[in-house]
Length: 256
Image 1 (tube, rainbow, N blue to C red):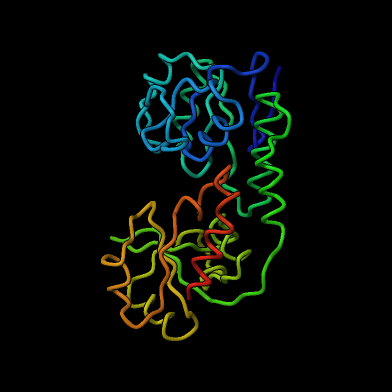
Image 2: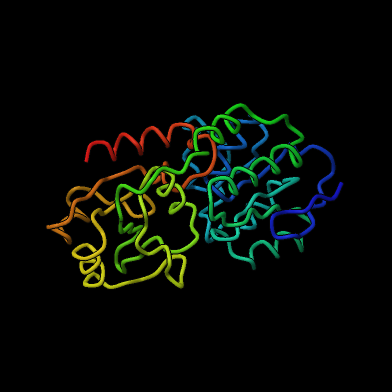
C-alpha cells in the first residue's frame, strides 16, 4: 500500500503500521495516545506521554540513524521543519518508509495532517481528542494584544510569518507583530525588539521551550514591557495537548 505524505512523497507501507519510530515530540504524543503500543522508538525530546517507555534515538535535528535502522520500523514519522532532508533520504535509501508532515502554518492544517497520518497510515477511526481540538480551536478571537514572541535567545529568534504558534496566538486574541515578516523565524537584535515593545507591541509572550524563558531570564531584557510566561508545549505542539492548550493560554492572558 503506497500512501503519500504532506510533501507529496510516496510512503510505501505494508498494511497497518505496528513498529513506528517518531522523530517529532508532538507526533509521538499524538500517535501513542491514539494507538498505544505501536511506537518502537522516539527521540530524547519526546517527553509525552510521561509514561512512554521506548528506545531513544537521539535528537530531532540529529537522530542516530543507525539506531533507527536497528529498530527495523515499518514507518518513521518526521516533520519538514524539525528534521533534516538528508536524514529522511538516508532512511528511505535503506528501505524505510518515512511520512514527512509539513510545517503547518495553522491549527486546522496541523490537525488535518494528523488526521491523515492516523486514519491512513494507522488505519484508525478519527480519535475523539482530534474532533474536540477542532471544535475548541475553530473560533478566531478579536485581537486584544499585539505581541513579540521570542522562542530563543543567544541569538534572539522570534515567531514570524505563517507559523503554527502564531496561529495559536491569533485564535486566542494575540496578534503577532512579526506576522508580516519575510521569514518564519526572524533574528532581530534586542534593540529592535525593545523598539517594537515601545511602539506597536503591548505584550511579550515567553514560552518555556524550545528556550526555557523564566521570570529571571527573558523579562529582564525588557524591563518596561508587560509579559506573560506560557507553556511551550501549549504554544507549539500539535496533538492531544491542543485540547487543554486553548483554556490554558486563555487563562494566562486573562491574568493580564
